[in-house]
Length: 288
Image (cartoon, helix red, strand yellow):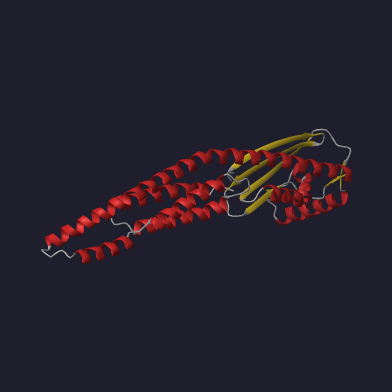
C-alpha cells in the first residue's frame, strides 16, 4: 500500500476563546523532518506534536503552521502582566530615543509579545489540549491524502512491471535464435576470408560467444526483482527505501544485459528496460 510524501491538509477548530487553524504541507525527504511555526502561547505543545508525527509518519519534510485568531469578546481568564508591560514600555522608550525614526508598535503588537498577556492555568491547559487535538485531525487528513496520492501511483508501477516482464520473455525467447544467427555469421566470415572451416574451431568460437552473451542469470534476477517489487507494493508499512534499493538492483541487471548484448535486439531491450526502471525510480523518490 503506497503512500506519497506529497500532500496538504488544513484543519480549523473554533473554541470559545478563538479559532485554531492548522496547515500542514508535506514533500519528499529521506528522513522525517518537521518544521513548526506556532504562536508563542502554544509553544509548550510542540513536544506532543512532534511525538504524534513520529508515531504516524516515517518520512517526509513537513511545514506545520498554526494560526490563532482570538475571539472578539474579552476573556475573563486573561489579564495583563503589568510588570512585563512596564519593562517593555521602558525598552520602547529607549529605542525611540536612540532611533528616532523607528516605527512605534501598535497595541496588538504589544499584546502578542511573550509574557504581556497572562492566561489562567486551566484555560492555557485547555488551549494546549485543543491545539493538539486539531493537529491530530489535520495529520489524519494529511495521511489520507498521502495514501490517496500513493494509490494513484500503483497502476503506474504495475504497468511498468508488466512491460518489464514482457521484455524479459522476449529476450529469453530470442536467445536460441541469436546464437544460431551468430553461428551463421561466423561461417560467413570464414568463407569471406577463404579459410578452411574447422568444425572444432567453430564450436570453440561458439562456446566463447555463448559464454559472453549468456544472460540467463540476468533475466532470472530481473524476474526475481520484479516479483519482489510486487510483493513490496502490497505491504502496509512504509516501503520507499526498499523500493529505491530494488530500483538500483533492476538497473544493475539492465546495464549488465546491455554490456553482454551482441545484437541490436538485446541492446534495444536493455534500453527499454532502463527507461521503464528510471520512470519507476523517479516516482519512488516520492514514496514514504
